[in-house]
Length: 447
Image 1 (tube, helix red, strand yellow):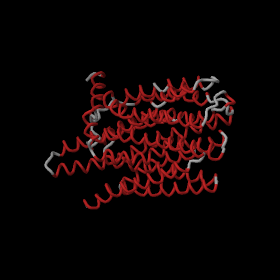
Image 2: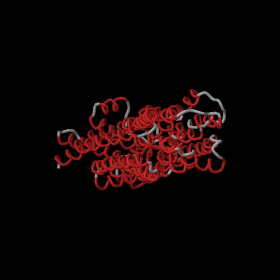
Image 3: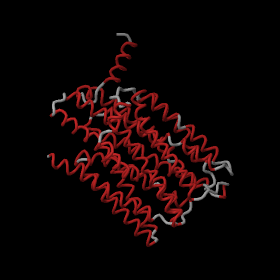
Image 4: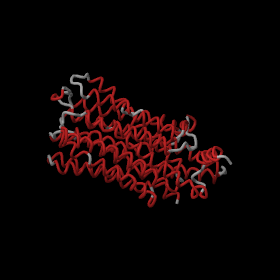
């Protein structure tokens, strides 16, 4: 066999291997999956940083640098990339199936250069109209959409028994991009002052190039069960899609919404300076990101539904702590309560995503007992999983939009965020009830 033929045979083996095939998994598949996972985490990490860059840039915006925007306008700048990223996620989830993990990751990472370069230039131009920043913030939304393609790719790389760990690690590494971005912002303020926001964007230009090269050189285009329009239509008609999406609004929507809004909340609730806000905002996203794989591991051990129920109960308790802190004007208690919400939402992100393959695997088992062949039933389950990952990821990110709009309206109406926090507390109660009624109770009845 010639070197060219051997290389083509290897590429064909890589494209077509099935992670559920244990012999092939142990003899090469595991190594391929881990190599692709590492590159995927790095690219998603950079994507999340670009997605959340406006949560830091708005802290710099002041009349002193010729960008004197108000609270309503600043909250719109952090809402816009959240919304765009959410709307693009279903398309990104399908694109990785259509074009391959390596090809799409290279493209989706390289395109991050556009909003980053534009942000670096225009934040240095005093008097720039607000609509220009709004457009650039919308372009930054492509960074948030990388989550859907990355998660779909990873779900196709690992067998179901390991997906809780793999998806949690991948998403947690991506979520860390939010915390990293905020640390970069803090370092820029500490070294160059609060009048040089362009330095924040400049840091990411070489990182985007390096991540693109890493994806091009180390990733593979692996065949994934198609989750195109047909699978997405089927997923839309499935009740699990919408219940899980609702729960993901409560976990990921909270995480990303709080991450984008926290700095502004500290500024308007307690009068924090840009340096003070940046000094506290990185800790919550950092701990929440690190907690996401823990959610996957706990779910592998005790079940996603059980872990998710406890998370929502604790999120409601954490919201109550914020209300107490606001009433007492306790800065330390407020920051501590918010940090706890980040950690809990991070764990919940992992547990909710673990519920996706579990729910559809049980549907496949029910179909088999009704007479459907096992290969067909589990192939359908894997196809639906890919579609639901994209849909739930998009709907969950819309929760971040709701969080920021709730804070914006609360501060414009009363100068405090209490009414927004009350709405979050009530929503967590609804999510806990849904988890118990549609997953825990039914599982107990089924057992």
